[in-house]
Length: 193
Image (cartoon, rainbow, N blue to C red; front, side, top):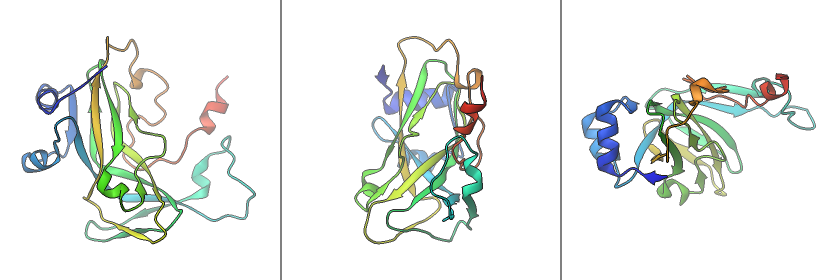
């Protein structure tokens, strides 16, 4: 796999191999790095409820253990120490080329505040369409304010050695087309024969 440079990313955007919406021209100049593109935080979050249960069971729909919070674009969301919060990117992403994939990385400026931008869901397969769910964790001993529109992750695009036989949309695709932060859908793995 090779990493796409800023020139390659611009070309892929122009040709529709990668779609990022919204992507204003002035924001592209700010967000495009030598080999990555910064993505912004959306305004919707999913927090985990404190329930009187001994544990979370991955064979059961995790949605019952969560609460969805939507804030205005000019509001702040406070993530507390040790808290896991699901969030969503402001941008809708499409990877239309069967030989391009993306990998999310937290921005170092946010990491230096103790915020991890994703726990495990950092891989974006060819054929993905949707807003990306972020798994934010605060490792800081202090609460941290987050604001919609702030740059929180960068996506690095890679070109595969050959096109994928099946894209994400053609395979399991549990999260395909997500527009909101999605709790785990692992319970669906247990429903399959």
